[in-house]
Length: 529
Image 1: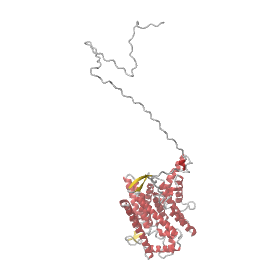
Image 2 (image 1 turned 180 degrees about the vertical axis):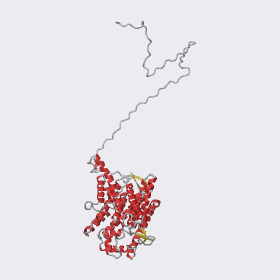
Image 3 (image 1 turned 45 degrees about the vertical axis):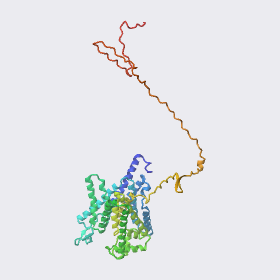
Image 4 (image 1 turned 30 degrees about the vertical axis):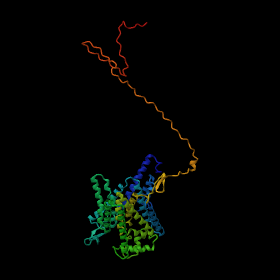
């Protein structure tokens, strides 16, 4: 705001408009980049790519137009700072490439841009839901086109949700949409499809609402074209979350709600422990067991800073013969391998805090909270068996949804509580003396020095009120029978003549006297000449 007060009135209006529309444009660019990879990855100037340039300019515009530092404060600032510090230390101390760390910084900058954008606008969910609808429609339409035209994608499914060889038997093409893998497409749709489902609420006309609903259904239906088992389970879990939050939780009390949340978290922990035990026991899970076991062994050799960002797949593939892996096939295990124990704990705190805040928002009836909770639930469930966030485009979508959740939540874990005002002590106190209770007056407080030196002024006497005598109503004498005054009688009129009407009564406004009769020549007075 200080930067715009020194400008002229037209320049101030242009700066305010830039501060309003530039963040929206930056978020739109990030969403389209996540959906289509439309912008080049090469830097315009050194490492400054078009996406980083737009995000940085939007953040500067928000600050220049009045956004304070408190508008960017969230509940996960500390774990994000720890994650960045650990990643920077692993990159510098390990003499590794800085490209993955720059991508992480870009994603975190997008997170804070979404937070500032949400808190600086009265209704930020409207443009966000429309952008999510556009992105989901693009990816979903391309996926449906690949299935309808039987476009070879390099991925096929055989039988009922089984792996198949393309071109043999009853294998079916698995859609990849605008991505390079069906699982990545499914993760993208799981994240943004619930937010896209909020777009039909913005339309008031029925036909427009039906069209927007149809586009959102395209995004949900495109998940089926991936033939991903994990995606099917995650999508079902997301829909179940929506049903529970919208129709079941409002009928439960607080203890029952906490019981449901605790049961869901316990089931998730039990599933994670079972997967780890399966990996230790040599289970396959289509090669994921070997990847998990190798990842845990690699972490034991470098538990402090990990192997570095973006190197988990190469290190795991070099320490196992099961096959080449691009990542650890588990979101949290991948962070453990790449950033060590500190980074793993930081990202775990981020995950738990995001889910907790989304649950609180959904319990309050916020539509954005319900959509974000459904998206994060499906994405995190799928991330137990895969790591789609290893791709920077999916990581941007994940940090975008995290920004939506944290922007809607309170910036602090515990709001400052205002202490209640102390009650005035009672004027009297009771003393028990025998069977009866008597009231003992409270002893007077000794005056302080300031009160003892205060001069005592004499009391001011009020002037006596002057009373006016009341006027008495006039009294009339009581008439005595036989002594009444005689009435005046009208003289008799001669026969044949009508009585003269009474003279008109002069009113207050009639000040002019009647004109005298005209005089003759003899009656006029002679004036001396």
